[in-house]
Length: 486
Ligand code: GLN
Picture 1 (tube, rainbow, N blue to C red):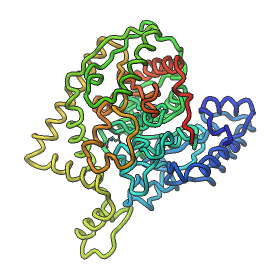
Picture 2: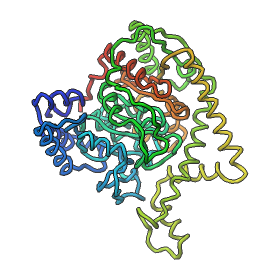
Picture 3: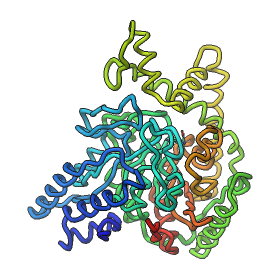
Picture 4: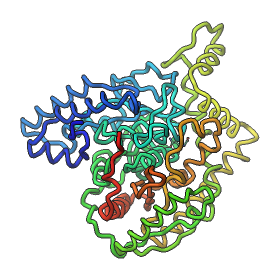
């Protein structure tokens, strides 16, 4: 293996700036790694080698001309739910199998403007609905730490690509945990910013009050670097708030003395928590104490309602968002229809997979006349209570902490026939989306030889403190330097 593909973004950036390697060399190293391991890992739906090399050459030429940009010449992968102009964007679905967007998502445009190189589009559960990539219409991605196991999901392709060094970093999306959970299962760093921190223009919608773009990286500094480039107001997305974007990399001081950390009691007492995961999290809490943080317990009394609330709100919004796939304007169209209603039914029947159909039915039911107040509106009220639990906790502490996933990577096929078991994979991540908060997962050890993730959750818009704490923890440990023997 060419070691260039193992670098973090900031390490590669330093080499490029010192003239010790070129963007073409970095890109070729990643493409060679893709060639080497992709047959077993299967992280990418589409690889774009020609485009990548063209962008890398342009980056090298720009550097020769004396130009600079924050990500100039750095190769990244992009989850296949983010629109890329001229490059097929499938959402892991048959219904968009041949869809080529005419425009870039804002986050993709910002990557391009920052000089980044795009290696390709990564696998995902269909329309980001899932926790393992097993709901992808195309194939299941494998966990680089154990090829019999899932990489997590729905951004499992991005997480596996980063963990296997098939790119330096990747973009994902997180509606209920889809960046943090696969990051935990693949032993890397996954950041979901505050709802509204990054534009979602061009992110193909799943559940609009929850969806947020996030990053999958090899360390915390890279997460800060990407957030600096991607965050900020966008006139194309009314939810992308006009809030100042601080210099996140400057927040990485390594000093967390006196900061208050809240340990979520309900999460550590959850009966579904694997004992190996619990032990790794306990050890991490001790490390955080030795760093001078004031560790205390906090309580989120409405924790038990997060899962049911999410599985009403997310499917309800999905059923509305996915109404646009009808075979008329774009995407797959089923042949042989007798009339327009038959066309809709045949197209959606053949174009969507089982989990997407299940959620459309659930969501349509929850929104239907007579049930709206009973289910959807009730869920929204409980959502407010969940948010208030966090508000109260943040009156006492600066950051809260808990496990990211209750279990390490599970076996392919183990949960796929039992939707409830699959939904439980996100028990500790979904409340963060319901409350709109920023969260990050960082590696904190191993359980049964598989990576474990530690989740920090911050106050709204306070990614700076969140990253500062995550960075200090990372610096005190070496979990993030471990690589799978692939
Ligand atoms: N696993 C959750 C779901 O299936 C979360 C997915 C996500 O964050 N996109 O909805």
